[in-house]
Image (tube, rainbow, N blue to C red; front, side, top):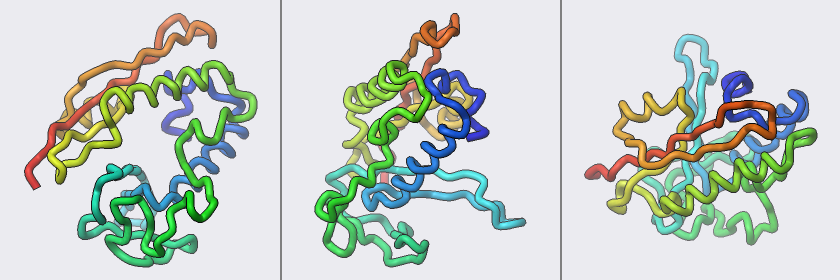
Length: 195
């Protein structure tokens, strides 16, 4: 929250307390979603989590590579490579079959209380359209496909150093929120590497 609270992409946000609550629910859903892999970066000196990221494996991916661990609700490891090509966990039940709606996608939660609903939908509809345009759900080194991400202006230089190239931009008109400059996300692709 602190990292993004002053960014140009928060023009649609609601009051701080509502955004904290909304973001917490979004993150909880992401961690509960068996089809999404989570990564954390821990400070070795004190054990504090300093960063985390998520990865949505392509639907056609069969299993997970060595080193991927699936966790249960209590945070205990329940096995490695337990996610199949159908996106189901090791118990054989996907989130849809279990009757759960655990999607951590921001638009799945709907607009946070007090946010600008119109701008919320424009923002996330734009992101979804870029994901479809660049086939984000079909990408993976092992399949010989590129890797996709959306980067903020602060993050883009880091991703460039990791081999990503800018291929598109997603610009948001913020005039309705009282700003005279647009917000722009950099759409980036990294070509597949040999595995």
